[in-house]
Length: 168
Image (cartoon, rainbow, N blue to C red):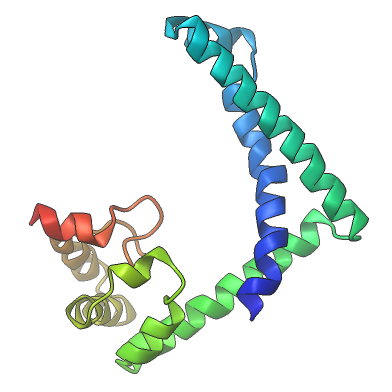
């Protein structure tokens, strides 16, 4: 239920905050204009239209949050708290070698399609190595599985597990 309660504010916040970083990427500054010079006129028009849509969405999202009396800090705190609790529950499932609990925790995520009992067993091994302080062993096992980073499925920016398994 927590996911649903924070999903919309998180999305709106993402549009408002992350949109700001997107704005840097799409704003028609001199640097961006030079970067876009290799695009056709039609592509440049599409880039400009996307930037206009992002800017409008960002303003609308911020207005919705303000009307609800929400601040960025409140939303960030709620998201941090939720992710910390989720991580603790995932760690507990790994420590207990409880596939069903872990699968339930990732049921509504992209991880759900990639998780199997074999994959979970590998994640348990990585977790055990990290917990014992064998970070090098955990890193080596993650690499042999085609995963990056310390996250449960390879960390942010890591390849999807199914892609890593295909590469083996």
